Amino acid sequence: MKSKIAIAFNNCKKEKRPALITYTVAGDNTKENSLKILNKISNHADILELGFPHNTPIADGGQIQGSSHRALKNGIKLKDVFQIVKKFKKKNPNKPIILMGYFNLIYQSGENNFLRNCKTSGVDGLIIVDLPYPENKSFAKKCKKKSINFIQLLSPTTSKDRMKKIINNSHDMIYYISMLSTTGGKLKVSSKKILQNYYAIKRIDSKKNLVIGFGITDKTISSLKSADGLVVGSLLCKTITNSLKMRQNPVTKLDKVVYNLKRKIV
Image (tube, rainbow, N blue to C red; front, side, top):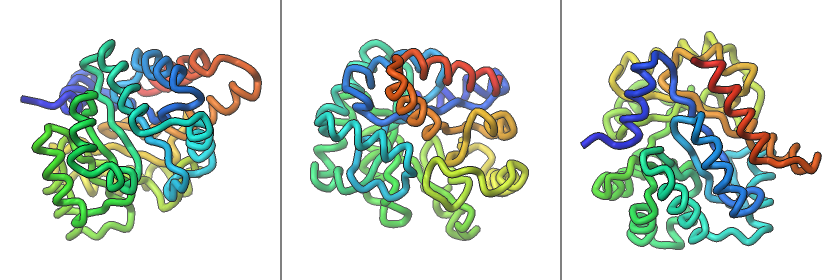
């Protein structure tokens, strides 16, 4: 049986476009608004990434750190993240949702307990930023047993030999980090160069769904639309920050931003 993530990619390929993958932080700016945002942007996004907030997010730039800070300040806990997912899935059972975060929270919760909560709430996939291959092999196997995608990460510095091993151990989606930077940084390399690296990876296994993340904005997204999927996160966190400063509704503002992103890749 195909996973919801695999089905989402298949549907996008039939429409000859990349999957639009959005990233927001659970609980930003409130638990209620976080759920409203997911429900709203799911009308345009194909796959939703939801970050579990962390007080030391090493891979995240200023915009996502700001989102995490707001969520933590409002008292978000891991159990609340699962509640948000559960409520979202009740309304949108076929929309894939991926949790993204750091291993420390999983370690504190206990791997088996964490995966049990993922399964009962409806999580489709996991991206654990600080759990690289091969250290993640045991946990990735546990995920697979629960029919949860463990999403492996590749970067411009990953050697070809290591890349082959990671791809062989991947599930239905692989995440290519476009540049060596924290999230939200301006693209330091051209779209042409990113796609050159991207297609070198695709030649190893063309059947694997490979998405590009880091530095993708409304200005750069259309130049990368030949990829299987594109992840936009910092732009969305920035939109929430700006709407709160202007005392505007972040749910409405994000809906417009994600709608416009979708228009640029169809």
